Amino acid sequence: MDDRIVVEDLEQLSFRVDRRAYTDDAVAAAEMTKIFDRCWLYVGHESEVPELGSYVSRDVGSRPVVMSRGSDGKIRVFANSCTHRGALICSQPSGQAKSFRCPYHDWTFSNQGDLVGVPIPDGYGPSFRKADFGLAQHQSETYRGFVFVTFDPEQQRTLPEYLAGATDYLDLIDDQSEVGMEVIQGAQLHGARANWKLMMENSVDIYHFRALHKRYVSYMESLGSTPPRRRGGFGSALGLGHGANELPPAAARPLAYWTPMFGEEVRPRIEATAARFVERFGAERAERITGTNRAVLIFPNLMIIDAIAITIRKIDPVGAGQMAITSVALAPKDEDPDIRELRKSHYLTFLGPAGFATPDDIEIVESCQRGYLNRTVRYSDLSRGMNKEVPETTDELPAREFWRQWDRLMRDEESR
Ligand code: FES
Ligand code: FE
Image (cartoon, helix red, strand yellow):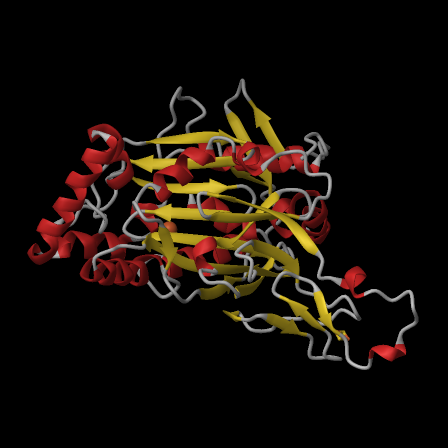
């Protein structure tokens, strides 16, 4: 029997994924070393550490890390583990600190990672040098405000090389402000009893929108807004596992695409912003930045949904059958306060874990995971759009791009 997990047949226009990929503990363990230890992984946005000494601590690829802006202004990503005997040196999710003090024996590290304090130092011999015990620093790079880390000491690709065609989409997001974008304070931490890859697939899947989110579609229609159209738009494979779906302008964007659900009061301000975009970028690119809705998948575990609000989802595996999701909203730093309120409300009512849509998505990915217990059906099908030159948003091209890269890495066919 063929043992391949991803089975693609270009003649038959068939793309199938063996459901062991979602359920098998050995597959989940192999993903940690073959994917999460080798790729560039999203850590956070530089606006989350705005001041000298700001930090956030979070897990990335199952490793606890601290992203800190040192007193020298530089952003570093440290292993959150004391070089003495291993305890977390930072247990707060975010804050401001000149130094990190390990709670176990009080070793103290500067926010640049140097070991600066050791209690009762005469317990060590002459060869003990503090300089040998600085915090381990992971290789990190930033693209347009998005900070990534890699745990691979032999990483061959620079971050822009790794991001491949996805850089265009990060440009479309970062271009939404002349002074920069920022994460709105506060993150939503949630999860699902399902394999992490199901949420990556779901977040870039437009095919399900009108079927699964009926309540939200009728709610939007009742407010006089147009939900995303079924036809039009296009899906893209952006290389190295990244993909995107881009819908034509139609739905509300609090940035610069007014629809009645925002109310007449803010209309002139939204239209003035729209005019400014045309001035800066020309009509065509301005419309693409401000009008189109897009879902961008950055392999392996970052999803950015840039629609009625911008949400950044970091999706991490917790074994085969569970995932952890961190969601934050991104917005222009210089946003009008009323429009910021609209954005926040749309982020919460649609994209947040208690919004109109995300609970549907969580429930359905958990339902898939349960469905896989029925082992009689071996494969899931992801072949939609293989018959087209330019697949539409309701096709499954971005998910296929994800799975092709997943397969190359899991089979050791791709170096990094
Ligand atoms: Fe951190 Fe001992 S483990 S000071
Ligand atoms: Fe959905």
